[in-house]
Length: 109
Image (cartoon, rainbow, N blue to C red; front, side, top):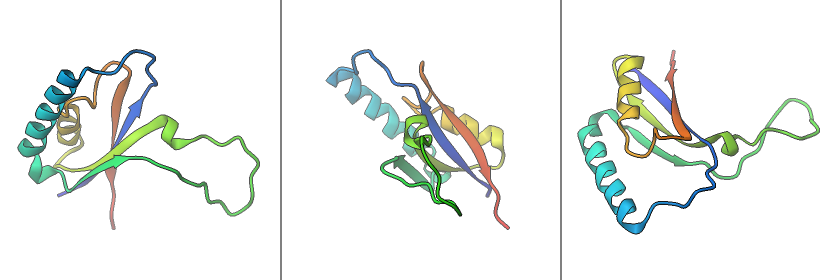
């Protein structure tokens, strides 16, 4: 089955975060989503941490920090790009105001 890279794009928010009750509700919805699509989620990925840019020659900054553009990633298995996008968009908290997900097919030889 084809695999797709899902990159969470997030916009920094200046508002308050969710309350503990809202977080508990979100985790319950996330766990239900994860169970529903368990056969399509070979790698739930995670948040991005420190990184480096490796090039053939030294460069002077400033360089774009990927973690400022991409909040996290996951791998989704699906028959089509549309199916992968549907699975990703159903993930609670992934697609919301100020945040979205870019779904890209991983092509292997």
